[in-house]
Amino acid sequence: QVQLVESGGGLVQAGGSLRLSCAASGSTFSSYAMGWFRQAPGKEREFVAAIRWSGDPTYFADSVKGRFTISRDSAKNTVTLQMNSLKPEDTAVYYCAATGPTRVVITTRYGYQHWGQGIQVTVSS
Image (tube, rainbow, N blue to C red):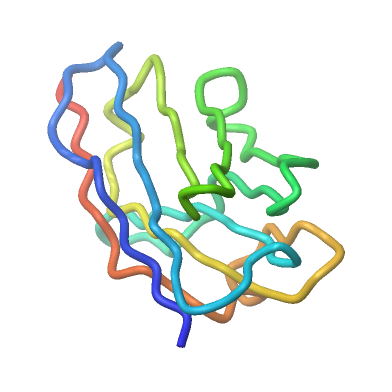
């Protein structure tokens, strides 16, 4: 049973940074793709970033390119989303997701089988 647990969310001022971590367990993730999605109140869940467990390639939503990075630590079975230059419009519940085995990186939420419980990120202006 795949389990994903997010941590690292919170409240930050605009221009600040946060680092979200996703601890993955319950499977061998070497053939998985991992993604981050977010959902703001009244909006659909949207893609933020994704990575193959091998470490590349990586993909980002246009809205976060140049500000967010995604990485994974195979030894710790974690995926990290580093968020810099945060804006109020980044405020949302952020979800970690996993799918596999797969040879491609998936950027749509419909392609992911496993989800974390979500964590709140609030950016104040």
